[in-house]
Length: 146
Image 1 (cartoon, one colour):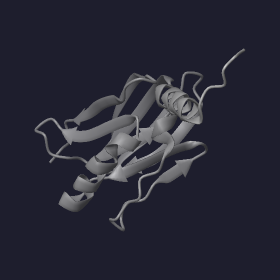
Image 2 (tube, one colour; image 1 turned 135 degrees about the vertical axis):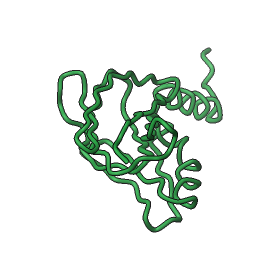
Image 3 (tube, one colour; image 1 turned 180 degrees about the vertical axis):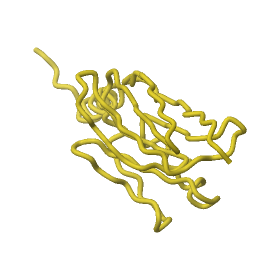
């Protein structure tokens, strides 16, 4: 006679599968700072900001809810804002197009992507991979005129 798995076992298995597939990041973070809010472009969610200590602290708290973490900074370490960013999938389809603050956090399915960024006439292109197991963290380092 076959035994029926307990509900606890089924819930544990379902939550483990969801976490491994990246679905655990699908939950939204409730922002307390009025200038921060989650945005959606198609099925992609993201948040950008990081101006001032309150926004930066709140974005740090929200970081685990997103699987791509991008920092815009001058080569001397100072944060940079007003960067235009486009993220494309491997087929060249635009997934998001936005103007960012110093920090940009995005939820993307596992896969390969290309990011195009422009600030003050300087353009950068970065290829990156999103894994279902760990976040993708990188910085866009700028040498902008003072």
